[in-house]
Image (cartoon, rainbow, N blue to C red):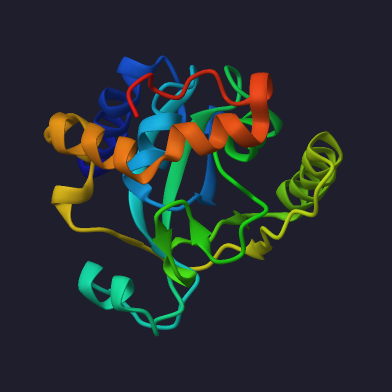
Length: 204
């Protein structure tokens, strides 16, 4: 009984800063190239409670960054997002995702090439799959181009090394230089124009 009360108290303390309870929280998982950038973009979305950089979609358990970036694991860099469904919807997160990446590129994202950096939407249930498929079609119509981003069933998600978490906050100068040098913002805005996600940072 005491252990149960302590567990409940710990959960309440964890969620208290976000004004949410466990029933209001849901998970979304997106691969959009460099997870530093995806994490930075989604942290700016009101209603997002937490973002975690990691690896998913492959066959190797507990992979390292070196393994994943070398290729052959089948994993993509991805971000798992915990959000308050009363503050932001899954459809809204999908819109942010499409409009902050180049979903027409099958070979990676911007300067990062290979399957590791290819886009994907990992769905956690049938409702998310339906929403993702409809949203992908809408994005294709908006661009007038074929979108190559697959929609996959979510599987095991492996948290990346701690230095990758919130990298844009831990090493802001290096992060800003990387984002600028990779041309992420420039290319997203070239593709989407005024419809690009407005929450992308100005730098880069």
